[in-house]
Structures are given as structure tokens and as C-alpha cells.
Image 1 (tube, helix red, strand yellow):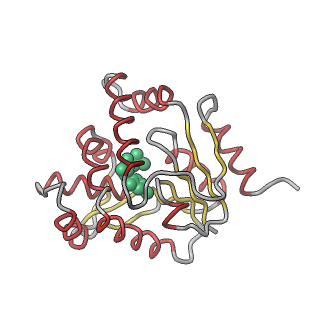
Image 2 (cartoon, rainbow, N blue to C red):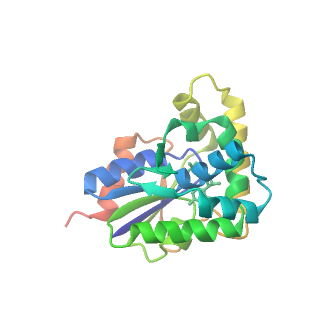
Length: 211
Ligand code: C5P
């Protein structure tokens, strides 16, 4: 079974997807971590973020692989390094390139083959698994999303976080391949006034409705 959770930056997708996967005994695929990992290697290697061909070559050679709940590059699991402002600023540019996206979609489908999973991202219900049994579009107001991101990374300026999130959403929504949009058949869940527990409870109810 596949559960697709898409939505804008900071809506709580990864936190909720991880918790939902745990509740259901499924694995969690954090697709944002894949794009972040490629951005991270590209920054490290000084690869031109404007070149889809160079990024696709890097993706083909850096041994990027999903892990349950994370990602590894060259056999090493990456964690907090993926959440820096530098990666935040670069990732949508990396994710914009059709050559990068098609390979990322292939990697995700291959990894998900035969697995029950909860995947979160921008194009899971529209492109990666349009046949997913349950599709959710998780959203919240821009202010709430910025506050959550700022709480995760103390020391960041709230207004700057808000600006960065809005800029990323705009770039993610405007691209021609795999743009952020609500998938056909997706249920909209606004998390602005909900705790993580409350959101997860709702999603469990959508996946396994009480008789
Ligand atoms: O979900 P997260 O904020 O970690 O995603 C980081 C970025 O990766 C997004 O802003 C987007 O540019 C890209 N992304 C994507 N498609 C996905 C998941 C993430 O383009 N399925």
C-alpha cells in the first residue's frame, strides 16, 4: 500500500509521515531528503546548479539512495547537514531540472517496489505514485509554517524564514515538471490549528476508516 503526502514547505509533512508510518507499521520515504542530498553534494562539489546535465551526471555517480526515513550518499547517511540555510536556498533550483526529476522518480519507484510506505514530498500523488491508495495534501498558513521551521532551527530570523519558504513554494509550484499541486483525489488537511498527534489521528482515520 502507498500513502502519498504532498504539500508546501513547512506544513509538517515529514514529521507527520514518519509518525503515520510508525503507527501503521509502514516505512517512511522522505523524498525532500533526496533532493536536499543532491543539493548538498552539488554545493560540496561546486557543481553548477543551473546545469541539469551536470546535476544529472552527479546524481548518477554519487550513489544517492533512500533509507527508511532518510538518505545516504556514497554509503554515508546524511542527517542535519541537509537542513542548513545553504541547502534550503539551493534545493528548489536543483529540483527544478527535468533530468534530475525523472531520475529521482525512478529511484523512488524502485525503492518503493513491493513496500508498504508513506512517502512525502511535492509530486508523490501526482507523479511518483498517482495510483496511491490514499493521497493527502497537507497545508497550513504561511505564518504557521514559518514559525514551525524557525522553532526547529533556533537562531533564524522569522521574517527571513517566511520569505525563504514563500520563495521556495513559488519555485516549486511554477516548474513545468512535477510542480507542487493537489493530486486528483487528494484529501486536503489544514494543519494550522492542529498538533502533530491530531493530524496523525486524522490521517489514520483516512487510511483505516472506523467501520
Ligand atoms: O520537503 P522538503 O522541504 O525537505 O523539500 C525540499 C525541496 O525539495 C522542496 O522545496 C522541493 O524543491 C524539492 N522537492 C521536490 N519534490 C519532492 C520533494 C521535494 O521537488 N517530491
